[in-house]
Image 1 (cartoon, rainbow, N blue to C red):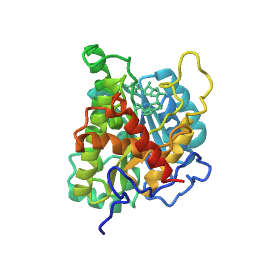
Image 2 (cartoon, rainbow, N blue to C red):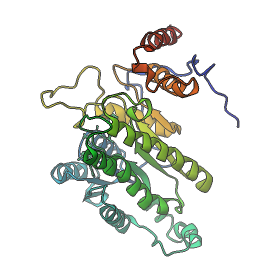
Image 3 (cartoon, rainbow, N blue to C red):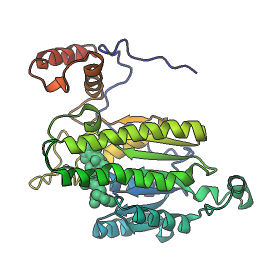
Image 4 (tube, protein in one colour):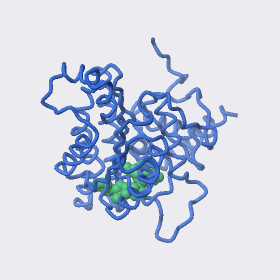
Length: 343
Ligand SMILES: NC(=O)c1ccc[n+]([C@@H]2O[C@H](COP(=O)([O-])OP(=O)(O)OC[C@H]3O[C@@H](n4cnc5c(N)ncnc54)[C@H](O)[C@@H]3O)[C@@H](O)[C@H]2O)c1
């Protein structure tokens, strides 16, 4: 089937979607989904806080088996106990892991597959194909179904020419952490019988590149590129059996975005639970780009900003023209006109 663009022109998008500031109409109890359902295995990195923790809790509610990984061992243990009270000890693995360290990620994979039934890598693809039949369907159901590659760190603000150590630190977690997990798990997931999915957590900052945090932006731009490549490769090789999804949270009140002085969620932010429910709904619908709104930024505002950024290249404007004094009035007019189309 050929898809047609919903947009009338790059600079004048036709709006196909609706703004969503609410999650109360969303459902997560769809136990018919081939991947996200009871008994299947979810691995969540960065699970000790914020979005990762909320995702692990949702997977537990849905009765998946859950492996949680994070560098924050104390918080991870606490969450582990909570999850055990929901799905039972046999269905929870608490595995302290630094995703920036490939050896630790390999150990994470081994523990997950040891516990929940990997066919050893040396077995042939032919065996892998018949194993679920031999084992009465049990083996296939115990492969990793949901790989949520979510661990990430914010950045000290700085200029592009400053703080090389900080750049390394951020890339080691935000890009190489994602890559370590992806390379370690996906090579097995592509051979499995049952459907599976990979969710990589990106950021709007990796798309629109707002000034002020260049290392974080660049790391998340790389995650976008990496995940697009992954989606294409999986489509070619597994014909939809394993899919990739770029999860792009809106402003979410988490450890990363909390300030030392704020304990209450700002009105504009979503809770991690809201963000995860929205993400799961869109994963179920099969979306690749999961662009999550928040109480301050409608989906259409994000769409217009993204289109403007892309047009910087197409129209040979200065870099980041949205913040360029000569283009500011034009950008504001563009946003006004774009939003007026909604009314
Ligand atoms: N909160 C937002 O508004 C927002 C917006 C866009 C994207 N994101 C992204 O969402 C993801 C989750 O962030 P969050 O907002 O929940 O922040 P958070 O700080 O609450 O959670 C991040 C978790 O990752 C863990 N972590 C950090 N480095 C790690 C490492 N090397 N190995 C394993 N775990 C590690 C932390 O210990 C923490 O538990 C991140 O990738 C972040 O960039 C967040």
